[in-house]
Length: 115
Length: 111
Image (tube, rainbow over all chains, first blue to last red; front, side, top):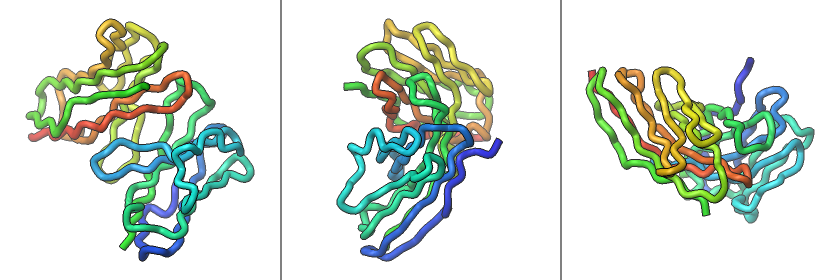
């Protein structure tokens, strides 16, 4: 079984430029999450999807961040314009269903560096 | 609100030593508890989980028991290897399904 696939693995951009990250979850996993992880810290949730619906986007900085999961499968996270403080690892995760007993499967992440 | 507290790292041990990484939590209701591991340059992997009090999660020689009376979920391994060097995260999932993460504990195993 393929895991959660993310691309690109690394991205370096200048501040004020746009950037997009892509995630393909495990087949059949209805719930998809985007997290941001700063160096030396735990992940922080940006947005959670149940199929194509964003059910929790309360932590997403909506002035510059956007996300979509149009067909309820793969998802894209965008930042426009990027700021120096956005440098982090962006992790995508999926789980079989929404429920507290389900562990998540994470992708390898995209390491973003804004210069 | 819900929260998770882990022991600060780094934790440095010699190969074959006994490992304990402490994790305590604060939560309403009956959360599920998880340990995730992050190897250098990689994403997070679920190591083990426990969904109710007194459950023991185990995987790859690691164990953790869900102790409701002490609100703890300490990670243990009897004999660590160099390949266990990684960052370990304790997390809980409550009724709102959101994972609450500890700050992570870096483990360094020396040969």
